[in-house]
Structure formats: structure tokens, C-alpha cells
Image (cartoon, rainbow, N blue to C red; front, side, top):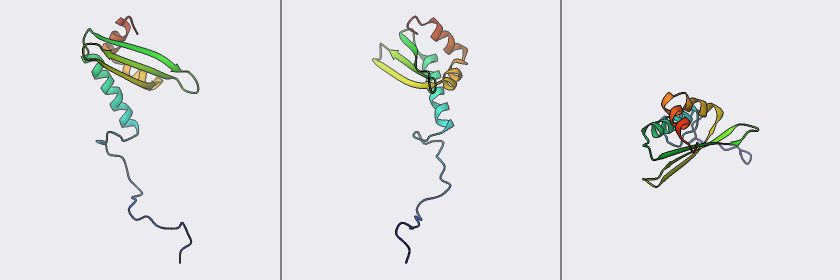
Length: 105
């Protein structure tokens, strides 16, 4: 007889990897998809779109809050990004221009 708590769970696979198509999957692919989504939304936004970036935390890690507001659609999106993700987003010239041109940023 086996001691209490030593049961083998046969339904668990030891090499379970998240699917690329899984929207709730965690990892580098997920953060890149979020940055790509923000990039597309900022570049496709019209003149009534307002953008704001604020630093929320500086220690132990820099965290920034990106706010996108579309008044005509009554749409508001808030995303928290770390320094690397923000720099990745700002590498695109169109995104950098939109943020620098926005008076509310």
C-alpha cells in the first residue's frame, strides 16, 4: 500500500507547453502580442484618439501606464507595461510621433 499523498496523476503531461493561439497563454509571445495590438491601435487611431503615458512605479521595477481613449467610440483602454515593452512600442516612428504630438501625453 502506498503512503498517503504519493498518487501518480496520469492525466498531467510533464511537457505541457502553452499554445501560441491560446489568448490566456503566458510568456514572451503573449507580451509581444499585447505590444503589437497597442501599436496597431495607436497607428490606426483617428484624430479624436488621446494617448497618455504615466510612470506608476519606479522601484523595484519601472512600470508605466498607457491610456488610450477614443471619445467618438466611448472606448478607454488602460495597459500596464514595463520599461522593455514600452521601449519596444516606441521603436515604431509612427507611434513615437503620435505620443509626442498628443498634448495630453
